[in-house]
Length: 80
Picture 1 (cartoon, rainbow, N blue to C red):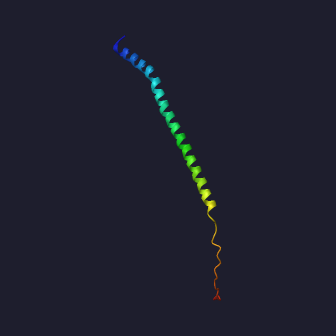
Picture 2 (tube, helix red, strand yellow):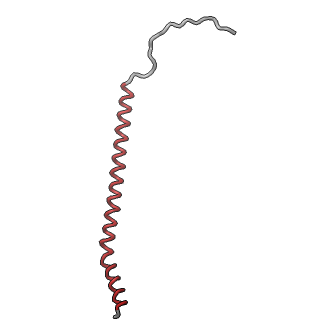
Picture 3 (cartoon, rainbow, N blue to C red):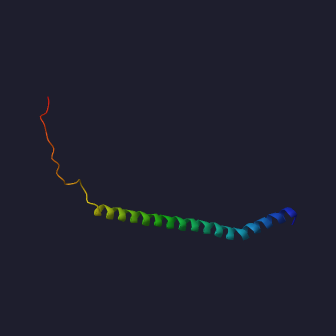
């Protein structure tokens, strides 16, 4: 076996040996990304639900409509 063939066999052995841990590392990074996305999404949904509940509660507490005081207004003749 010459040096070139030996180098090719060594490269193939390196790839065969190192591919597994490399793919595991990539999978872990992807899993962390997915978990982070899910946690952020669920957190955002919880915050949005709380904001909606608080807004509805505040809206029901406040009296709605215009004041009911009667004000006397004089109406004069209209010009044409």
